[in-house]
Length: 150
Image (cartoon, rainbow, N blue to C red; front, side, top):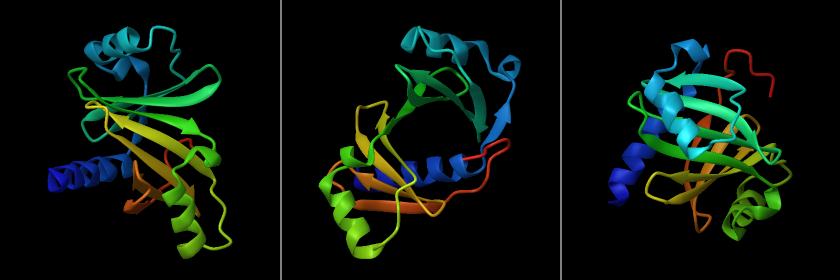
């Protein structure tokens, strides 16, 4: 199971690295309907295509949120921006030991369709992905996306 999770995470990570902004009109109807059902109040600010998946970016209660769906509208994962202080202790320990003096630019809680939680800390344009205990799973260099200014 752990191997399967690693493979899925790596595959999703590779697709995320190649995300492209798309117009809402180019997003399949079933994807938009699934988003509306899961997040009825969401007003999508940006759609991205990540391989064959679609990511919607929006705010809920002023918190940056993303939801990823496959082309049939099946939910894959959500990513919710959190404060650095909300990351598991293991993340802070990893950063102190391996990235001393570095600042976390953004942090997020990622929940997949099965409810499994992981965390992301962006440091120097590298996304560090940790499991729910704060153990490093992987790191991936972030590439500038179309129109991204972050």
